[in-house]
Length: 312
Length: 321
Image (tube, rainbow over all chains, first blue to last red; front, side, top):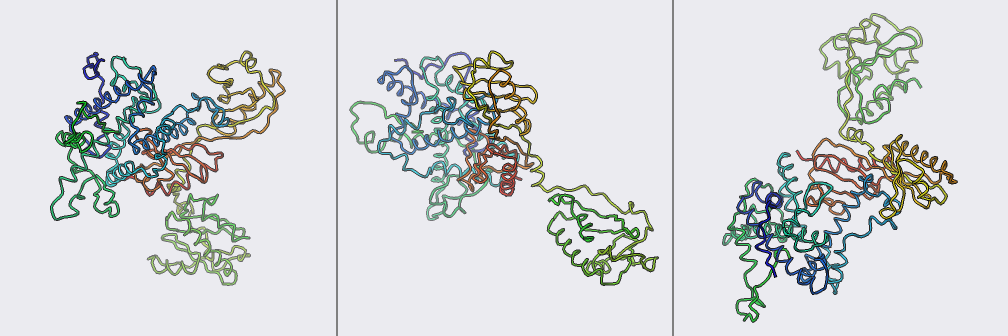
């Protein structure tokens, strides 16, 4: 099988460096993220997504499907309930936005939904992520998660960051937060660019819904890396003997510290840009073999490298 | 009642929050020309205005029983209408109060009850009047900025329609059963687009307001009637208003999202605005950072302005400055 790590030379370059730099800003990094870090994060995301695609391709071939669909990618995520829950919410939010967006653009899209809601074909469920999630989640654990802590923490952090921002900075910050792996800004958000980036030779057939999940996962990967960097910073700032030293000025909100939110400082002026070393440290911790299947003292019979996805 | 007649002068005509302030108000009396001058503090508070009115009312009732003075305040043209005010101004103003040149008032003065302070026409009253443009409060400014963008209405023609027939015999219509099982008809005046279904239901969109929507629906019904269908015009109903408004101040969406988590959903990655689902009235608001709002789902103009009234103080408190 062809390796997907070598297939990059196809003329024009597609990269998501600008988007990733904006995303990092949105997640709480310095307004001008370190360029080297951005390149590193981009390569991590690309590698992770291609690995996922590779694995999903295998599953789709086993399934006998013609293209990689969201089914195969959600299958990869099946063990992480929290991420399944996040994807579940992601679909709900997208549907909600589509619904509220559909009305203003009635001229182009069918406005029939307003009246014949039940029998209109255009609003027929296009996204099937939730159905697939329900299929994999036999114990019905996803529906039992009521509170999305990751989401909540990210939002608290964003609110804290914006608290004391001037309007100009806030505007820039808002623009940065709007960045995503979808191409274009506004109505016609597609996955053209993402597909070109992941699959430059068009060798794989990826369905639109699969691309939507990949888009979610790519975004999630960046978010996880930035979250983890703040986590590491919190650790490194710890002073012996001072139980609250780790809450000083960081943007990572620890659930414990939320009760006394005094310790989360607002503002982001002083945040030093995330360095390459910090990202590497994050990766080291992620891929650190733990005890268990890929642990230090486990005799690995099949010599497979441990596969782990940051976002999953 | 005489006293109520000039009271509205203190407020603006419709008594709304748009507070008009008159520095001077000329009033003509049946008996003789009197000039009543109110010098009021320019303060945008309606409650103070009402307070003032009440006080005037009280005074009016006792005005008839008291004897009348004419007080002319030549310097600042402050003329007093209540005893309380008078003493205050006497205390503060440096100009002496000159007694009127006319010793008594002729005619039935008690019919002009409020102001015991009549001045003869010594000066041109227009010189003392200063026009102040009404200062609208932010809320009413935002309310005035509501602009209807689209109005969706539905009507039933009460008969089964042959869509292909309609499509073939009308101009500006589209019919593509594979894509959408209705005829899309357009009319130019008022500019509107309609979806005509086989059941005889018409959905009319694209009109700017409810009136245009109604006219458009009627015209379409007429067109279809002329094609030979026994069309009636049943159950015309406005289904949805889409309106925009501008708050003229930026909003901190993150903080709003934090505080109103159960109504608001803000995912800038997916959509740059905050989607706020108001429960009563049942309207969906798309709120953007720059203070622009899009209202959808409202069934009437009232609901939209009501929604804005509710959301305005909320957004005000999340103003970004």
